[in-house]
Structure formats: C-alpha cells, structure tokens
Image (cartoon, rainbow, N blue to C red; front, top):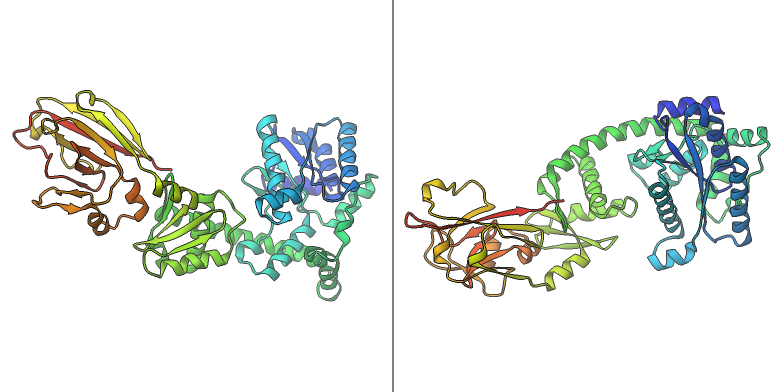
Length: 468
C-alpha cells in the first residue's frame, strides 16, 4: 500500500519535507490505515504527525470507547492526540443546520484551532476510492454540475489532503488485516436508513456485479478527467470575476456586463461572488444562482433573500450582495462630525469606510491648483467659510446648488440621476460649510464655495475610500 501511496502523494504534491501533518482520526478502518501508513512513511517523507479526534456524542457509550481507543493508539505510537467532545445534535439545533453540516463545521473549526495553536500546516483525511465513487453517485442523484461530478479532490486550499484517495476500500481492509490492526467499527455504517449507506451496500455492489467489475476505478478515472476540465473553467471564471466583481467593506457588486457572458461561466462567477462575500462554500445551491440571474433580468430595486443572512439587490442592473444586519444598522444610523475651521489643517477623520483629510493652502493662485486631477480631491475657498465645517450623512430635504448652476437641486434627485444605490446614499459623506452643502463627496460640488481668481486661501479635501 505504501508503494502505491507514495507516488500518489508526490504526483499531487500533497506533502513536502518538513510538513507537520494532523491526521483526522475517527478510529475506523480508513483513518487507522491512513495513520499507520503516514507513520511508516514519516522518516522517508521527513514529516511530523499527530492525530485529532472529535467525539460527536452521537453514539452513546460507543463514542466514548472510540475516544479511548484513539488515545491508546496514539500513546502506543508516541504521537500527540488532540481530543474534543461536542454535542453535535445540540450544535445543529442552535445553528439551524443539519447534523452532517454541523459535524463538518465543528470538525474543521477544531482542526483550524490545532493548526493555529500547534503549528501544523496540513490536515490529512482518510477518504478512499470507494468514498469517491459513493460521493459522485450521491451527488448525481441529487442533481449536480461538472464540479460536483469531479468529486473529492486530492487536496483543498493547500491544507486539507487525502493521501489514500488512491486506495480502494478492499485495499484498506487488506492493509488492516496484514498489519493485524483492530480498528473500531461504526455500526451505523451498515444501517440502510441513510442514502449514502444504500449506495455503499446496495447500489455499488449491484453495479459491480451486473455492469462493471471495475466500477470503483472507472468512476475515479472519470472524476480525475472532470476535475481537470473544471479547473480550466474555474480559471476562466476567476478572470471574469476579477473583471466584473468588486468587493467593498459592507457589500459586493456584480456588474451587469457579466450577464452577457455564457451561462456556465456566469454561474461560476456568481457562486464565487457569494462564497467570497459570505466566506462559506457549502450553503449555496443552483436555485440560488438562478434567483440571481432572474433578478438581474428584472427591474431595479428588487431584492432576493439568500442563506447565511445575506440578500441580493438589483440596483440599476448591477447586482449587490449585502448583509441583512448591516442593512438595518446603516439605515437607522446617523453620523455627524463637526470640525473647527481654525484647526482644520492636516486633520484626518473616518466616516463609514471613507477617510477624509483636510489641508490648508495659503496665498495660492488658482493656476497652481489641479482642479480636475481626481473626483476624490476638491478645493474650496477657505475665506468663504465663516465658522463650522461639518461632515454628516444625508437628511430629508437636503439641497445643493450644483457647480455651474444658479438654482438649487434636491440631493434625492441628484442620487437618482447619478444612479447611486439606495444604501450608498445613506453612507455617502456630505461636506457642509456653515450648514450649507459644499460637496456630496465623490458625486457633486457646490457653486457657493468654488475657488476663483480672487481666492487667497484654499481648503483642499482629499478622500480615500477603503475597499476590501
């Protein structure tokens, strides 16, 4: 088995010399096989190994016997063993998750803590070739795309590795018998109340007997081919994501141009945008992607709720991904910062995700100022300001005399004309001098405080918008 595993590890670049590998150890045949193979190879690979066991508290006394067994095995091998107990049913109820998803979340949170605290850089899980075949058939029956049919990858995020994915369950059992190991057996694996168990116990044996003796290897070969095709499409979609999507502190924008691309690529870009914003990979399905595509074809202002407390909104054809909590917070919040004109030079403040900095330029001529160098830099006649300088968000009835005009115009109408999204309107800084609006920052300046040939002292205002 080791002779088969070593080439697989090297071909897929799973382990490098000096790696510290944490083995996810349930105590079952697969994980015990993985632990022993890596233990045999640790000198050759020049790695350090340890084990992590999560007691889900789901199987009564058997769960505690598994825990004892794992601890004893690790003690005998002289390796560290990290153990945690979590009531998965209670966790699932509190977080409104399925038991399977709750177990996964808790398990990987546990691994991440150990990695951070103990300096490990790889987590090895014991998925084998039969797991691969079962996973692909399970996804096929639920409905999946190319990525789902690619199945389990040999590695993920350069952190999660599957060194024995190349071994069949028959080979794992042969290794266990050869090494005279005595793994724990989870009796629930033989209960046909679970669909995955039905695939393992009924469907795959039937396919093997009636259609293809080599069905496990055949499905695994297919998964490798599809993974390569999927990697190509992922690279293409990532390039388009960078072109059409932009993430800010509180939201992510998907520009409407993406919806002119081919649908398979659009689907991938949208999925990447959702996971990039929410930092969760497993709670979004194709029905959510289709909702966004449908939303993009409808009128501006429409909203669709999605999992993980986020929603998407069509704003003038662009799609905004936002957080419900942040929406309520911003809509109800008012912000106001007052500054002293006499102490304004080199003053710097923060307003939402904007940094606003002021500079006083004395005895400056208009020809020395680059008026149009940036829409985030503006110059005002300092001598026209009597007292206060104020930065705030918008108020009902706000008006401004736009540069080049004689009459005033409502901010609301300017926002609509400029197609500024509704929530951006609430957090757009409004710069006021003596209670009069001088600049809707980044959008429109006032006629009242413009610099002229008669201007002696200038107030320069520089804006930096923090993007994420």
